[in-house]
Image 1 (cartoon, rainbow, N blue to C red):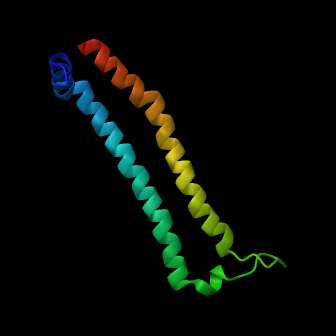
Image 2 (image 1 turned 90 degrees about the vertical axis):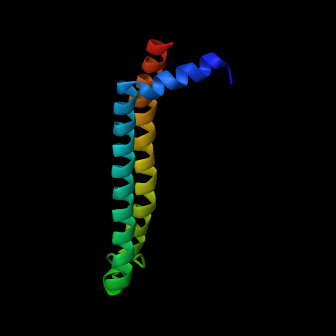
Length: 104
């Protein structure tokens, strides 16, 4: 790695705006992870403690309550990932680029 690249990395690591960006990114990541964990473990707790309710048919069809809830767990993972990617591609990447340009 070139000496100028190492120097830029050191400047970025010491930059207060970069530290604020790291905190915002970590807070979002932990929040979304907690949301996914709550959704997943909530479903698992329903499976463990309310299997009869999950087995309740929806109307006169053979589909039970558990099927759409299980699909909801899967879809929520995609939605939460999409939220993170959207924010990373807009706010986080723009801020990172601004920091690099300012310190270069």
